[in-house]
Image (cartoon, rainbow, N blue to C red; front, side):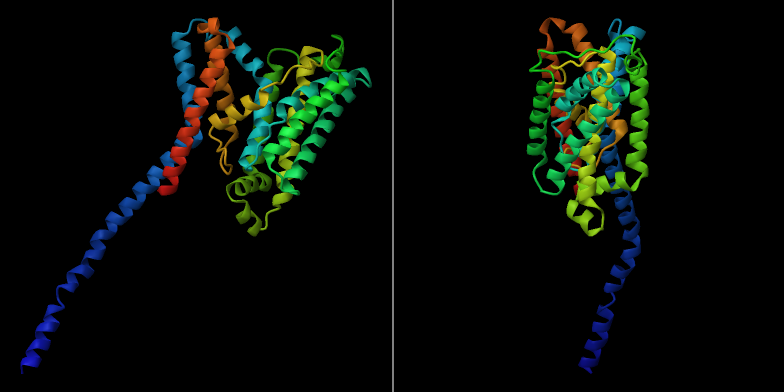
Length: 354
């Protein structure tokens, strides 16, 4: 009898477990709310990381227009755009390289080499040679670097550092240790393709639009994000990793050589001492624009914002801190880049935690 009662009480004692089952539907909305909040925070974090450079550019531009005398004048804005058009092209090629998880330290020297080859080529075959020669030679330099990195598995830093020294050495050999400067006549049609105020800017805009389409609307562009994000996973997905990694350096070299060719057309000569440090400026612009140095994330719009932001800061420093020379510009750019990299690291970690 007692056993029966005990069993009955035990069965009744199971009752408290029933409200626990009823609690599940009540906690479900909280779970969905928390998931939505995490998703929202993740989106905001990603947006800050990717488009933070563009937001800062807008703020700096508005502030400079309001508080800096002469900044918003047409002549000053034209000077900012045209003076940084060729650096923008170097940063464009660098964007593809860094998204794929690499680095290219040779673009400054390749840029200078492209200009010397264009001027030399004009004197030895005319305008067509002046266009084709720098593009072909600089593309080959990029191809050699890409094959060493992709096929031989060498470190991009070391390979492109060697490419930087090699391109500069070839430039010195062609110009007889810099003692010979090849010139282009003012009457030549070749001198018109890089001339004018807005033609270089229009060229940059067109190439940036085409690059954005290549990066976002083609399988090749999407594969670069996968390779930079996780190369082993990209291999397992069946992507042509080695080929695409090699091609990205061909692209960077070709764009750098083309920028040098256009600059030679504008200057009507092949300047031998140009391009020193341009690779660092290009890398800084790409990173400031939101492209992760580790690869796998970035955008062409962000790179454009990074180039313009550095250009505006240099312009403001030249106006208000001209007494300190280039040292002030280098110090400000270095500090700004350090802040951007730190913020990128923090935001990336927060995004992964979420």
